[in-house]
Length: 273
Image 1 (cartoon, rainbow, N blue to C red):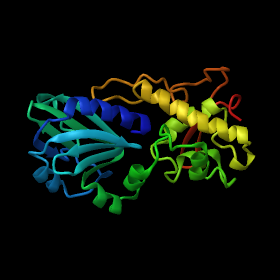
Image 2 (cartoon, helix red, strand yellow):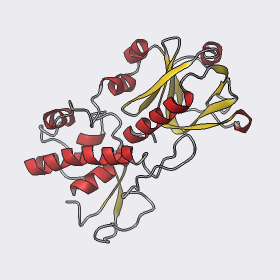
Image 3 (cartoon, rainbow, N blue to C red):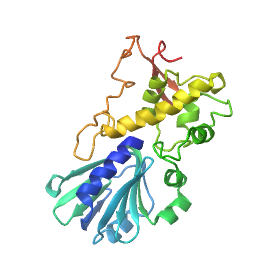
Image 4 (cartoon, rainbow, N blue to C red):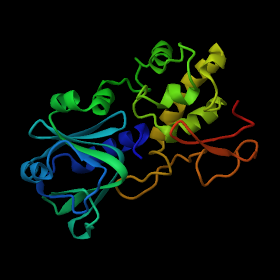
């Protein structure tokens, strides 16, 4: 799943490798996917993308945005993987392929569900709420992401619901998904099921600091080790709260793994209160 750190890593790598390349051919939905959401009909991609030049790649929250010479962009989000390879190595199990003038290609594959959008940013913002929120969000490492902004945007000032609900639902902080949240809460020593009303001011400040420091570390190390970059290399950040891990890395207590608020939570019942 592309989250805020992985989108950042993709954007840097893709700018270096793809900027200035011309798209010469396009393959769309070689493997149809029920949960591949596109902003236009597949034929629109196939007809309009060839001949365009990639002018740059940026990230907004968890969206990777490939900017094109027609002033439009390809924006991808959620459970999409990108693979950069020689044209002759393209598989048949993909939802989009961009083939370039140097006979290399970028292959898009969706696992569970994902967005592969193409269009003008203003128009797509008017039609797609999550894309709009991603573009309008303030990145946690931006100077404008102040403690006051954090408290207000997450609803931690309302004393309602759980900590997980505050930080990782309803796009309060776009790009901060369940995978990133687990380690943030571990570093803050707070359970995902903890009631917001029970948090002290020091707890809230600890959460704010953990959001910034954890995301900063994930980005600096090339993303999480549960994800690969477009060359198939895993990120260098070792995820602490993941399915494969059975015991806490600090106290060796058995990790708790359970369903909560529409997804799995993993936490240490001793370290996280």
